Length: 271
Image (cartoon, rainbow, N blue to C red; front, top):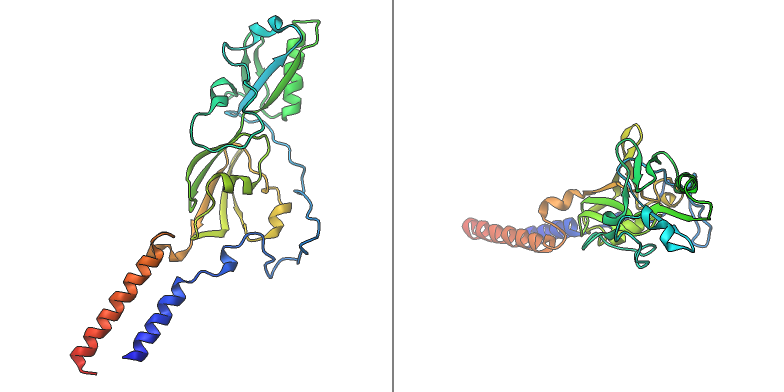
């Protein structure tokens, strides 16, 4: 009887353990080329430059020495408060840039007061800014400065994240780890070698599998997230016992039931 209980305890203990190799970020996995801790890791193979897409939201501001000149080119109350751009943010609360930004329609146009519709989809932020600059230069001889940028990076988390839903990072460039931190990290039971990124392209949608355990991620095109990305973290098989919070309790209950059953069998058989 003691041997049976000991064996059952070992089995339960073994199933409750999760190897550090399954939950540690940026490891040197056996199939990877080793990277020394003090070795330079290059940025993504292709320089990151986001291309604007339909349904993106951009912030467009005008500045000049004579504020009255640009009043007609702004929606009432849409002027920047100066306290939003450049800061990191979560998905909770209000999203001021959504209300004061310019939405790119399905045809790739933004409609700016007085300037009308300007097609900027398929362009980088810098090229789109230059295009708006050319349009407003048609109205004035004086120099008017145009600022155009993505109104935050919106993405969605699903699966084994501590906070799922639509999130916003108020930057024009964010890494996959910015997105993880902004989403409360992954749960203990998330398969960090199976993070799926569902990404929009001009021709449709693609699904990419990302391995967060692999340092090679730092040099991959998916190190940076893009607006409208969907991040899905697949759960480990052990997830069937419960989530990360109640897994220990579930295993303890299982062990108790097993011990009780074996005790009854022992009493009935008289061994």
